[in-house]
Length: 485
Image (cartoon, rainbow, N blue to C red):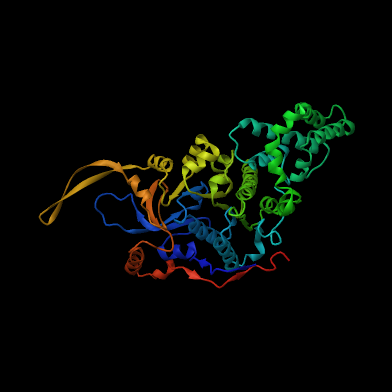
């Protein structure tokens, strides 16, 4: 596969930090160049380089913005730098952005990490790794992953039934000593007749007082004895969703696969770069299901590290585009509980209301409140603006009157540090950012606002530094032939 574009290769955060006089450490995040909005009085605006230190970057970030206003390019730059810094970097790209893939590969080439590159894609199955997302998980963890992959349902009843049936199948397989359970195993046992066969096998092979038999029989009792027509209707969501994972190229990549190289590397402390290139423009349902399966397993691995009081070394950072379509109930655990395990996530989505539509108001609000950093490109969604307005501090904004050759300052009023209407007027590549309790107006490369580049040059000249440190370079075309033998 030849990647046709010429990828943008950004100066590393370390280079920019050296240029800006910032004491950079691996895991820190350079958000961009811009202006602090927290100044007081009539001081002259001074350009700032906004870095989020590693200890706060693990508190996770949400990036909002309309299509084609800079989210994906910010993702591209941040992921590229994480690769250069040696972090375990995971890019979840439901859409399938070739420019993003090219930058990931360019970063691997520059950092000499091509031997650590993992590629997962149903679009290019001959180049893709195989992954059993259920491999190595405990029974209840398997159930959580399967349910996370199901499409959104307004009727909680059907999700509960799917959960009950999955749990009965998984516990029955474990009772019979089958350690690795695959999606194809679950799918083949969904029909009621197959469940009854498993129940009979358990009765035949496992001693009556064994705990495994008691658990499996308890779970099987209601499921296997339900009226046939009723059972067929209530498990239709589960059957339809899992069947799509068990046939065709996806069946080879996921449903019938054995082992999970992602889990093996994470749990063994081996660093890697994973790019999931999923193609939602070709099949939204398929791409989002695979994204949720991947992300839900990452939540489990991070939770395991956290429960063992271990830290990922090197740090793990996940960049997830189109995040609202990838979220599931339980994703809040990633933001609320695992920062201490050296696991960081950056989620990119169009609006707060998109998150609400996927996981509900309470979970969406919890994720927003507990994300340390927010970056907001142009948005005009009322729900997003209302949520942002709630964290805008109010500052004294005095009124200035010209009297002769001087200004008189008269009493003003308390107003939000940013007029909420300004969020819907931002040009491409420009964002407001909130981190460490402060608000900034940022420019993400390339610097597109008129005068922005001049501002960098003027600042550099005053400091006696080279402004080219913030200029985008270009690399030749990248080939990925032969990466998998």
